[in-house]
Length: 358
Image (cartoon, rainbow, N blue to C red; front, top):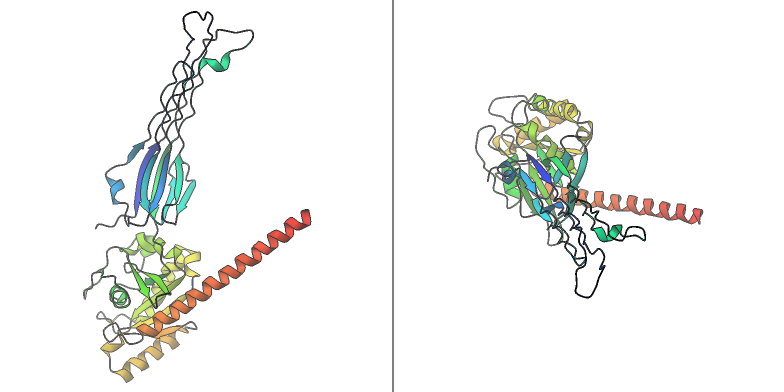
């Protein structure tokens, strides 16, 4: 399926139904008085997250969405039917912004989460509301109001615990296909991956995490070069970055230089992204004799002055991959534990403040 992660749509809420001016007309009941009913509310439009979707491609063909109008009121104080709500299904991880005002509208991160994007118009009032002691036969009624009309930008940002980044042909697709059930295209040439792939890594029946394979980055990616620029944003939600490095590249590019290039692109793109925890994965160790591969890895670590975690892996022999995945699971579990503790402390502080006010 073709991957599309950005789309613009127009949404228009339904118009409220008009109120009606009507009078009671029955035999033997003179001066029946007003009995005009109100109109129905216009239908509203909601975006709803759906985990069964993984692309915004449908919005490239259907861009305009309009909810149903409310019906006009009727005599005998009958209210018109409200317009039906319009539910638009989008992938989980969709970020919504208003194109005209650049306002952040919402972020759909959970399955079946709903977001109101266009409220239906208010109903009109029937003439029964305008009856008074001085005006017993009001002929006034009000029209229904139009619904909200907005131009929206939809942007899909993948929800993954771990993001893979590296130069083209660093072995990201091979790694994700080795440790998960994902089957991205794997080939021995650059830019094999043209769109992100997600894989679920299962450590045990109770422990698993999602890993994302992002298209390779090159120098100038943050300024629009190559394929990676449009996918850098997908790394912003991840809790951990794995920086894959081919220790024996075919083009003989210096592995240290490739690490520094990508680190620079991350800094230029986003300070938040560059500040995320990043582990170094020295990949394709099977291409060199063991002693030579070990010496080269030590040299790369020393030249980078790398102080964070470092792993030596081979997706062909699966060397080092199990240890890497187990350590990731432990780190993510610790991160979640720390986040829960911080949330608990914040909640206790709020309770203490409320108690002080009481």
